[in-house]
Length: 409
Image (cartoon, rainbow, N blue to C red):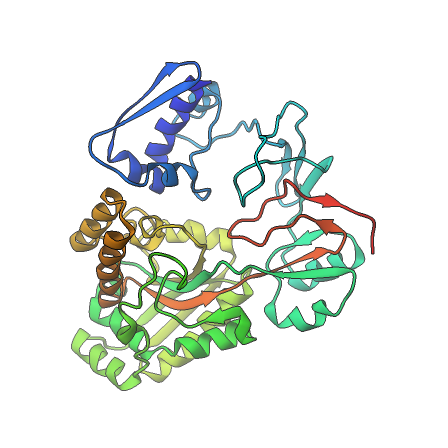
């Protein structure tokens, strides 16, 4: 009901970075009747529907009593009102969903994450399987129907196996290294620029992702088909000049202090990219203290500004630059820049694509001038599923409604 929506949106506007970005312009959220919610803005904003629809850090709706129970803490009671309902979470073992018989699908056609959602399966279980080789073997044997994060160098072999289907996500993600702008050595812009200058992004992409079809060296955060495509900053992205990097290091006053670099051993492509980068940077005169840890530890440590300078990560596709996490002052890295924030505010204000791409071109140039983060380039993840699993969509997000199982081939 409307009161649940109001409570959920108000909480989202407080606890989620993307919610806070939108709620800077929100004057009030009120329930006008049981089925109508009014969002009143302080000034024009062209991205309200997009901000509400984006799934990552999304505006999820909970019953009001669940919001009140959680207070300022984490949501602990999960309801589930979509095609599948939450049943249980056994940490490090499984998450189980079951068909929700009370759900009624829309009448329109499916369209990515929108449109009609049908629950063709009785239940779905998500199982943590850290080892990629075990995931692959499990799908081949029929232990699992679907697996994430398949090494791209397995594509040719898996494509020849009739019982499985390797699936390449054509919506690009991007790989990179995030700097700590709040504390430590990476607060020095010249040192950050030196790191960017020393790196050979194409060599890192090749060594990390293998076959060329799985990666693309580009300064643009968006493909050419997207209205926000621009090559602003290309001269910095394509620099690869270790000699220039050494000059910048000298100007920055760098004296061989170790750069504390966090990377997860649970993300093989993260570790591969960081290892190749370490070799390139050391050749340019930097000392890299590569600290390898599990992902949960990295996520915990990156939330505190003391103790690290860089961490390796990948970023999913977002439909608009205002949602790019490295540009958020509240996301780990804590990039604070008045000029960039002014660009972001203009992007929130304007709806005309021609005006917006001009604003974003200036912002992307600022990203490279400031060395906000290292953008290595695009990469295209690979999934694997059983051939009898049908209806799987290769998009920016993975979902399992509208998916069904036929007889084994």
